[in-house]
Length: 211
Image (cartoon, rainbow, N blue to C red; front, side, top):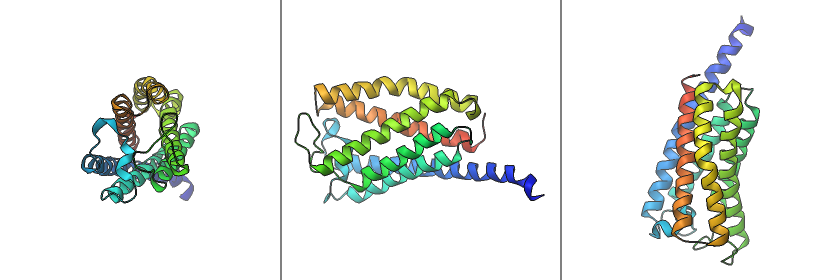
């Protein structure tokens, strides 16, 4: 009898993980958005991470939000079907990188090369943030190719990846060719919004067991 119940128990655990992932993702997005809106006031010319600069009154809210988003990615990785190993691994990597970006704060302005002088902490924070975002976008691609993920989740992931990939390339080029400014600020926020919306939608889809 115990053997027969195992598959159902695993499905229940994955559904629970997906449900908590959705809550964490939504809560994290709200917290980070609140910290950014109430933060230094650089508008779209600054990086999102500037809301978490050490000493800022809104840094705790920002970090809690980032950790919640990281937890959402890790839980979504656990909720995916076993056959979606690559997507789960990429989401786990994205979650860990996101947590690292929250633990290591950047200095004022979150400077990055090649136009600004960066500290070691700036490079670690920036590298972790970029790696986390890249891992999530690659997870979208991997899941869109995985038949075991189900038609709805694959379609959702394919659409999100198709939008996010060129935007990520644009962010990278803008950072290298233009540097800090409105262009990078707007593109960064759009990419992060796509990642959050996809993560929330994917968690709901998996949690409800929609194929």
